[in-house]
Length: 81
Ligand code: HEM
Image (cartoon, rainbow, N blue to C red):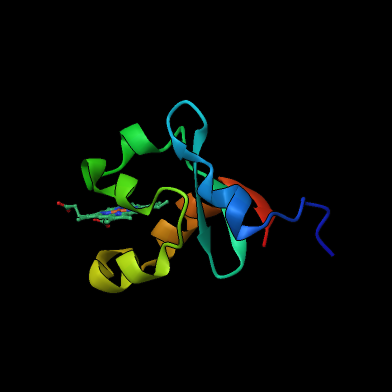
C-alpha cells in the first residue's frame, strides 16, 4: 500500500538530463537519482541509464548486486510504474 505516484515509462524517459532531472526504473519502482549522479563511484557511466531501466546495466556491472547498493537506491524512490 504505497502512496507514491504512478508514472509511465514515457514520463520516466523525459527525465534524462540534469535540467529535467535524472530518473531511472528498477523492478517496477521509479527513482530520481539527480542528486546521486555526482556521488556515483562509477562516475558518468551512470548517465547511460538516464530515463531508462537499470536492469540491463546492472547485469553488466555486477558490483551493484549488493545490499548496500540497493540501500542507496532506495533513498531516491519517487514513485512506481
Ligand atoms: C560502482 C551505485 C548505476 C557503473 C558503483 C558503486 C555504487 C554504485 C554504490 C560502488 C559499489 C562498490 O564498490 O561496492 C549505483 C547506483 C546506480 C548506478 C545507485 C543507479 C541509480 C550505474 C550504471 C552503470 C554503473 C547505470 C553503468 C552503465 C558502475 C561501475 C562501477 C560502479 C563501472 C565500478 C566503479 C569502480 O569500482 O571503479 N555504483 N550505480 N553504475 N557503477 Fe554504479
